[in-house]
Image (cartoon, rainbow, N blue to C red; front, side, top):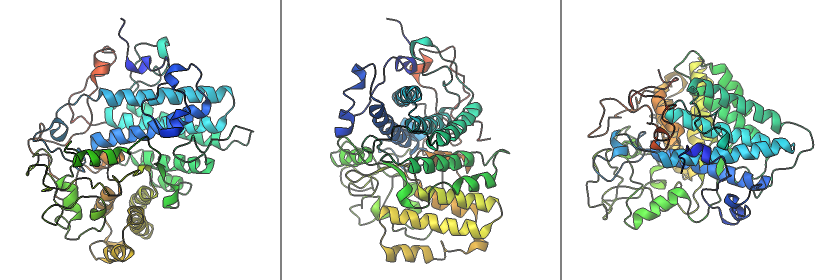
Length: 469
């Protein structure tokens, strides 16, 4: 049988990778239909995009030291190359479904679906290029018409992402008669066009912020985008509909069944339990399991478990925690993130009052989101370690608090690299395979074995991407 790139094989049919209760049942299995319904593709595209965010977040959470492996010198912990073919496949499957939805929407002048498709495409593509660098796009998603796609330059694809967002906003803003987004099929914003437009502007602010280490970064452009983005936690782009357990809940549940996973890194736990900053964060009990010692203890990356792994000697994702309880939401883009993007942009624009107000608002929004007691929230936010006053605000404080807010989100790895991993007491994993922090992922074997002539060569996992110089 001829061997072809998975990207292209996915182009033959729209593929649904994971079910989604009664909503995905409406698709009647897109693997078996040549013309899936437009709203069925909307369901698949919104679900798969959210799941892609989880998959990438799971990978990079070891690099940001949110999570740690319970096994000593685990490849993902210590910067050995890992084959992420499965994640690569999932991304291109999702993007192929989105492309099919966009093509179908354009043919039928369904501009709302077309606009959402462009925003979803930008979201997926941006995650890919910020992890792998150059990837196939302009030649990909064409099915059998292009079996060996070229890899586009990441710098060009950043511009593609921005153009997709601009075009998506334009399509969603059209006043032409256009089929509405079905609330039951749109698993992220429940059919709200205004919510999708806000998310597009929020993503523009995020994507522009990725260039803080380059001359292309302009704080004023970021602040302008934010005026049209989120204004409350209720605006957040989230997935709350699942077939069975939500992804992080499945991780935490499996851990209780001795399928060990979801172990919290000592870096993250120490940042919240008072060890690193001398202040206990009330969000930690809403995230982490308590140990048998009555406290919270993480696992050092690369070291593996200290205890047996079965007697609660270390903290894990708590089965009843905000991120990992039953039906816990997957957070794609949030208001809290936007406030920290605003704080950073205003700070770099020498506007300390705006930066400080946004910094405090971001902390408060996240505490409200995860369910912190109002009295505990007040005590934390009024502590002089946090409430430093606008004259004493620093980028270090902004990045420190944003690190807590972006827990498990793949964008946190972009932040870590923009910040050059300068978080307080942030160290290389034990037994690290490199003497510096990881900067990129290696290309998966699904491409190196089937599209080898087009796969770019890389110098190593310490090679910096175009925006990370």
